[in-house]
Every structure is written in structure tokens, then in C-alpha cells.
Amino acid sequence: MNPARSQYCTFSVAGDLYGVPVSHVSEVLLGGELTPIPLAPPRVSGLLNLRGEVITAVDLHWLLTGQRGQSGATDEAAHVVVEADGERFALAVDRVHDVIDAKGAQHAPPPGPVRQKFPDIVGELLTCGDTLLTTLRVEALAVTEEIVP
Image (cartoon, rainbow, N blue to C red; front, top):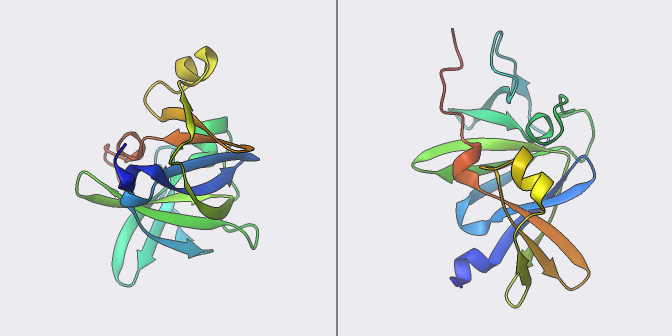
């Protein structure tokens, strides 16, 4: 396993623990004010001004539960800024946790219902000691459609 792929930035969404490879993460922002986009697809929670760079924020709560997240509604809400295929965007999450080193972790495919519901988004399940981590494929989370009509 590639050492860069064995470390995961972890966060929770709707009470479940998820992670993305650290190699895709450029920074983590606690809070952050979003600018809403009228008529944007539901997976887009808004735009984030990152020191003059405007990036799209993806609502992981909506993607994973089908309900709008509470981005910024709590003190623990955060945005994980990631890059995939040359595109930077933010993942709106409920709470950021530690970086987990998954070296030596048990790897398993996600259960059938999870694979059926999220065929492109979910990578695999990792068991690291007592922690069960669902990895997400950053490339599949990018917003590729036009967000402004």
C-alpha cells in the first residue's frame, strides 16, 4: 500500500465516521461562511471564499443521507478542502477528527446495500483497532455539472 494512501483525514457526517486520503487534503477550515447559490444542485451547499479563491462546497450530509446538512450550524462544523483531477473543492462535514494511519488495517469492500446506494462514492471499509472507517473516493465527490444556470 502506498504510504500516502494509508493516512486518512477523518470526519463525521450524520454520526458516521468517514475518511479521505490525506494526499488529497490541502486544508481543514473550522466553520466558514458559505454563499448560497440559487438553483444549485442539492449536492452543492454553496461557495466558499478561500483567501480570494472561490471554491464549491459539497454537502456530504445530502449525498450520504438525502437530507440537507447543517453546514455552519454548529461550532464543530467544518470544511475539508480537497483536490482531485486538478479541481479544488470543499467537503462540508459535521465534525473533523484525527488523521488515522491505516497501515495494517483490515480492508473490506462495503456491504452490498452500501455499494448499491453509493456505487461511486464509497471506497472501502477499514478496521483500525476499534475504529470502523468508511473511505470516500474524492474524485467521485467533485461537482462536475454547471452550478449556475
